[in-house]
Structures are given as structure tokens and as C-alpha cells.
Image (cartoon, rainbow, N blue to C red):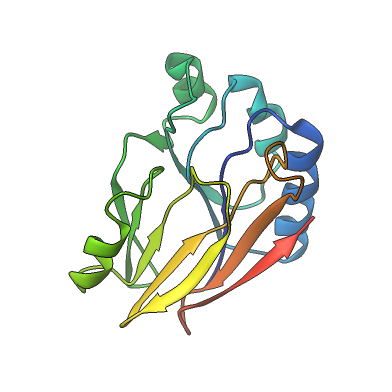
Length: 159
């Protein structure tokens, strides 16, 4: 199963539209957003995803009531645990407990954001993915990741 992983979209609608087009073209089966949508209007672009979607709130997500409504209840507080393709996944925004969670060997995939810096690595049997910033506002590079849950590997894509 291939999944898309995005984070820190920070209202950059052109980047979100471009990412959605790539994710649809690559036929990912699920998209995870690791927080910092910012405004609810980001769903003008995200609604075009042709797969299921799960997100978590980040530290910059203010209008949570409307985000919750427009996402149809698919944005959660962190940490959020889900299972896809028989893999246990934890999603969070901040990075503070990534190492401890990886050392626990309790999760197959740990997804986080917040730092705006891509991080794709294995720690033991756990794949850790921070897709960097989709917005490109902080470092000037719009990035996202696509993960293969069957091989527990991921690739970084620059838009």
C-alpha cells in the first residue's frame, strides 16, 4: 500500500493543488497530513484527493471547528494512532517523542512534521518520516513523501 505524507501546508494553495495532483497521479491509497493546515480553506484543494485522508492538528491550526467540519471529521488531536495495511502508525506534529516511540518498537511508522525539515530514516524496524514543508515558506523547498507500507520505505519528492 502506498500512502502520501504531507505536513506544514500553511495555506499555500498552489503547492497543495500540485501535491494533490501528484498524489492522485501516483494513485496513493491514503494521505496523512502531519499538521499545520492553518486555515480551513486549504480543503478547497485537499477535497480533490482521490483517496482517504487522515490529519492531525498542528500548533498553527486555529479554526479547528471549521477544519473539523470541512475535513468531515478526519483531523484529530495528536498523537493519533491508526492502522493501515496491517501496519501500526502514529501521527504527531511535534518531534519531541519520536526517538522514544521508535525505541518502543510499538509502531511500524512514525509520522511527524513541525520542523519543516525532511527526515526519512529507519530506527530498528520503525520507519520515521517527516515530509518537510509542503508550503515552502520557511526553507524555499516544497516537499512531501510517499511511503510504501509493504516494504516500510519512503521517498521524498520535491514539487
